[in-house]
Image 1 (cartoon, rainbow over the protein chains, first blue to last red):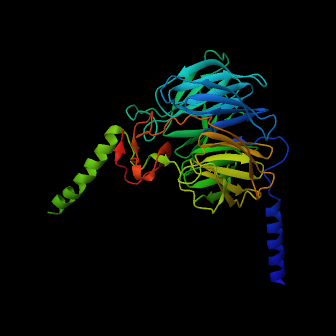
Image 2: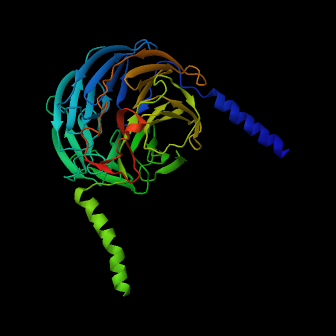
Image 3: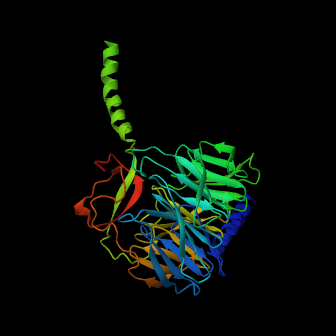
Length: 249
Length: 177
């Protein structure tokens, strides 16, 4: 009798596995804050080390190159990340953040920039604020100046992003933003309430978590680290539950 | 005597520590060269699964999670049951830095090209389009990673032409900038 149960469970398991699909329709997936690719509607934006490339993906099977724009001034380039919010692109480089705006189907237009000291710096943003982590030492930065910080910028005026406040961090990397909650991979995972950008509050800190970048997805946080893929239920920010920890090795 | 022995043992440790700390460098992480493969770079196919030992990027689409191993390809993880994710495939895309997915089409960079891969059938992805020579090979022939200060794995000319660099865990690196 037991073996029948076992076999039926196995059967269900394998039948489920077969159904796994990449998904139909025209929905797009989600990348982390360290991404170099982003798709907004019918356009895909890709950053290389020194340029922003725009593709039309209105016919998904036939991507068309639309434009290539040079970004920054560093020989060889230092562009690292791209993040899209509404009609803006936030591009992170080792020397600053570049802001572009775009209209449906159009070529992105350079709007403004914010320069900072040398370091790795992903960006996440909403309509009014951008969050930039600056990581130094090790594989980023000059190694001469230690700056491990979270910058909060006012981006209401797209031409003049303004630094509101700098918060000290340990060794920050990727971030995720969900409404008033900011997740920062920083020697573990830090969770902030950003209601007041001039005084963000740490709601929770999970110091032992292996975290390099995060994706927020309807109450589930997917975290990739050096060795693990961790999924957390963050619907109750004070009581975060582990869904799974998956060893990538 | 014991104290002397202790000191003698500690001195090299101290020296090593100072050497590293002064520059704020960590020798365990740094940049590693990516070499041009001996086979054709544009062959994209499932390969046997292997442990992911480098730090990866993450991309999520529906029930699947993609862990992008820089320069090597994409580990596909079935997340139908989030309490028990499972690695199901490894798609080798040479020189891949990132991906994005719309519908069931994956876009990825493949060395200097952008490819569109049709994933309608997960078991048999097909490259349906290739936009060639979009990405200039910025780091081509470089002896060191550009715009980078720190430790890196020295280039071994015997391994071939360097086409890029990736962040990696290093084993006793001998090169630094």
